[in-house]
Each structure stands twice: as structure tokens, then as C-alpha cells.
Length: 190
Image (cartoon, rainbow, N blue to C red; front, side, top):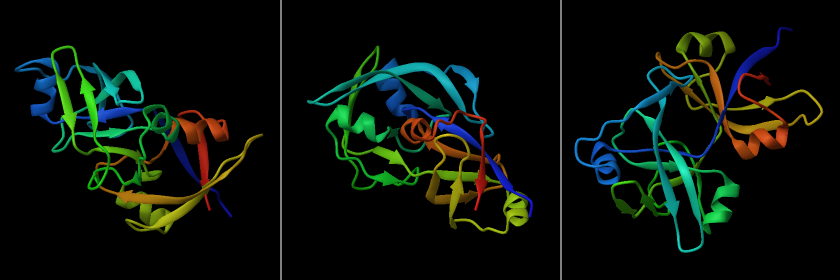
């Protein structure tokens, strides 16, 4: 039987911002400056970075990803949440209701968010054609395994299907480090 392979993309802490919040942090009329394209169509890392601040800790040089969004959202790892002293839920991107807030500090201004900090649920992006070939559908939950000296099985992996998606499994740095993975490694859908 042929293996069903999925490339992995390791995601470090980052945030998505609204145009309004971008201007609070970087000044009126500010625009995001593309640093490099990411694996998903139209997504890119930006030169702009901010600090994440709580009363218990701070993370500096946290990169913004573009383009601007409808809501500001911060995605961190469990290790980051310990440093910041926050109880952060694991959520699908975009689901920020009842999540902790945080202070964002940019070069121009500061922003106090009431919500928006999540640990992104591990997920696989794919096109409808990929899903058909793999025999899965949108919002399915699957398992994926790695090979190597630190092999693991990732359970509870959410499938996200859209025509403009590129086949790619997103995990955070904690998950990647535990399995000795780097962006571009191949995982097997089981």
C-alpha cells in the first residue's frame, strides 16, 4: 500500500493583525512589509515585529504575518505560555472567543488586547483534489506519524480544505522539537 505523505511546516510564535491595530503599533498609514512568502498562497512573513508583554513575562521580536486580518490573533507555543504566565487554550486559527488578552508593544504605540492569544491546533491544509486523493473531508480529525529516532504519532490533527490551500501540516516549535522535525520533512497520514 502506498504511503500517504504530507510535508510539515514548523510555525514559530507569530501574530496576525488588523489594519487598525497595525497603525496603533507602527503609526498612521502603516503597511506590512513582506519579508518572505510562506507555504500557503498569499501568506507571508513581515519585517514588522512587536513585543508580547504580561505582568509575568515578555517575548520580544515576535513577527507579524500578512496580509492584515479581520481580527488580531497571537499564536504561541505551550512553552511561550509558561514564560508569559498565561493559561492559553489550543484552538483552531480564528477561534479566539474566551481566550486571554495580552499587551502588544510596537515601535510607535502600545495595544492592550482583551482576547486573542491561542496555541494553534495542529492542522493540515489541502486542496479539495488532495482530500479526494487521500479519502478525507474538511474538518476530519486524523493521525499522522513521523519516522526517525524520535518518531511520534500526532493525533487530533484537523483537516482544513480550501481551493487556494497548499498541502502542508502545521505544527508549532514545541511539537517539532519533540519529534526532531524541520520544515519540509515528510509525515505519513495513517
